Image (cartoon, rainbow, N blue to C red; front, side):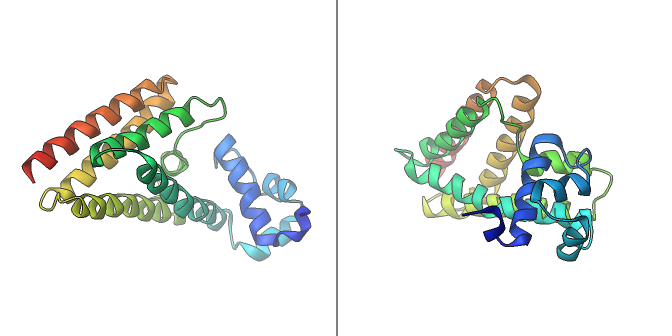
Length: 194
């Protein structure tokens, strides 16, 4: 399939995703995105009212694939819920060992836009993190961890996001594995209390 067979809006989002993830949102111009997508700047602005809207669309495009990947890694891991959540962290650590790994696009974008809490991308990032937390809560409840599920889900999200930040800083994926061990301990303790 040629690039022109892909709908223009999707080509623009794909180009933006590649550039924003690799170089950061502030350092990438609308001109660079248009060039990467093979469209004019006018065409880009036909599909997106502003660069801010494009940044929001970039993160919207990462939302479901990222959540689906977490769900797949959880489902593929053997064992109890603690082992399965540790499987998510192991897979993230494996991904972090790739030389092109740049961390969590949602967190990196929120850091670049920290002084703009109403930005469309910040809103998308908040909703994504809430969906991950809600999925963990429902997963823990289904595993019989009823009363502690909301707090446990929040703790696991903190371990996930904290490990993204520390691994990005140190370039050492063993921090992610250590966070997975901590997550496993928390889940085992909650399971014992269920």
